[in-house]
Amino acid sequence: MKNIVLIGMSGAGKTVVGKCISKKMDFKFIDTDDIILKYTGKTIEDIFKYNGEDYFRQLESQVILKYCLGDKMVISTGGGAILKDINRKMLKKNGILFFLDGSIEVLISNIKASPSWEKNRPLLKEGDLYNNINRILKDRYKIYQQIADYIISIDNKSIEEIANEIIIIFKQYSYCS
Image 1 (cartoon, rainbow, N blue to C red):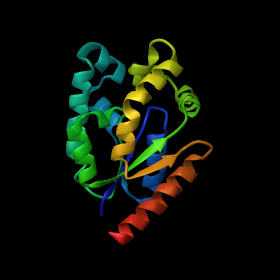
Image 2: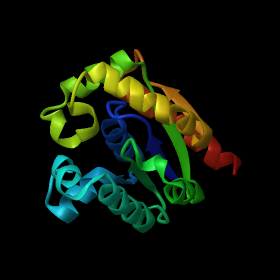
Image 3: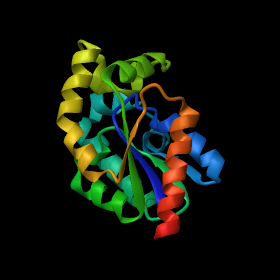
Image 4: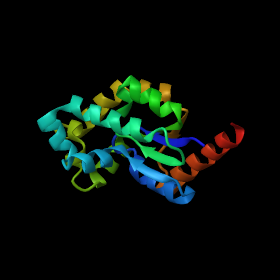
C-alpha cells in the first residue's frame, strides 16, 4: 500500500487535512516540518536565519528519505519540499501525491488563522503577505501541477470535505492498482 503525500503552498491545510486523513484511515501521520523542529530544537525561522534555506532543504530531504519508503502513512510536506528533484522522486516512489490547491485569498486567510505563523513561514513574513505568496506560488505552481497525481481544490471546503475527497480517491486508486 502506498502513502498519501500532501503537497502545496503554506496555508493550504496540509497538516490539518493530513491529521484528519490519518485518524480516519488509521495511518501514521508525518509532518516534515514538525520532524525538523523536533530534530533541531529550533524554529524554522531560526534555521533559516542562522543556517540558511539550503541547510533547511537538506534537513527536509533527510526526513523525506527516512520516512517516504514506509507504508500506510500520510506525509505532509513543507511547501518547498518539491523544489528538490530527489524529494520529488522519493515522494513519488511510494506515494500518491495530492496537491492542495487554493486561491491566494484562502491561503492568506488560513495562514493568518495560524498562531505565530511568522515563526514557521520565514519566506512569507517580510513585506506584503499577498505579494510574497503570489511570487512563491508563481515559482512553484507548475511543479505542483506536474508532480501531483491529483489536484484537490481547497476553496470553499471544510477540512473534513477535503480529507474525505482524498480518501475516496486514494481508496479507488489502491483498489485499481
